[in-house]
Image (cartoon, rainbow, N blue to C red):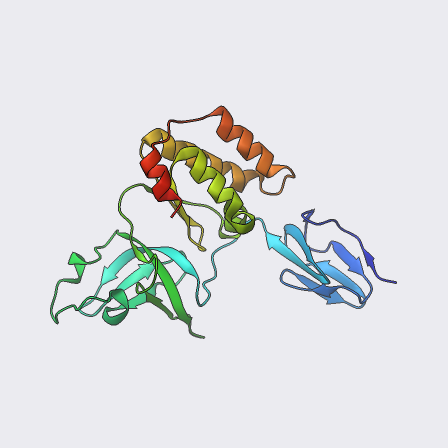
Amino acid sequence: MSKLLVENRQIVIPGDILAEGMDYLPAAGSFREDDKIIAAQVGLVNIGGRLIRIIPLKGKYIPKTDDTVIGIVKDTTYSSWFIDVGYAYEGSLSLKDATSEYIERGANLSDFFAVGDYVIIKITNVTHDKSIDLTMVGPGLRKIRGGKVIEITPYKVPRVVGKQGSMISMIKDATGCSVFAGQNGRIWIRGQTPEAELLATKAIEMIEAESHIPGLTDRIKKFLDENKVDVVKEFKEEAKE
């Protein structure tokens, strides 16, 4: 008879036995040894049906095709930009994937995206030799203007977003900020006031630090309620788009 030895969202370390028997299957961060499923890394247990995976508490971003991320322009050539997406290798953005507008040959590419600019960008391909292809052509993909960009552990992004966007919507409603969470752990916050941006930042940092503790949603709601800021209606409506 199979037996589950851990609870969902329990913190485990490498070597911990998660389940016995053949009814459960190892997924990311775990492996099978004989009839046991064992943790391969430190993290939170995630049980989905028969699958047992470990969500790392920390870790570097691993790019995947179709991820939407926040990148930083690092360099330009005569026909492309090199973008830091938080990985060991930079991504490449070609002219044809940079914009739907026509760019004349010989144009100064820095007039479009300069070194140091933040951009919301999509990964279109990751090759076996770690080459990353990017695009800026698509809904919501654009250069970031105003606000601030913070970084958290990429694996905590789903907790910041919440189920069906519930957590990030709560932060937007309470602060009036526009908040975009890239899958690489970079988060863009743009508010009407520095106080609003600071409150949204603190809420997100709180989520990152306490994501493994039960009752997170209630604690974040209490924190936002206790530290209310004046929300400009027009900006709040923009943040819901």
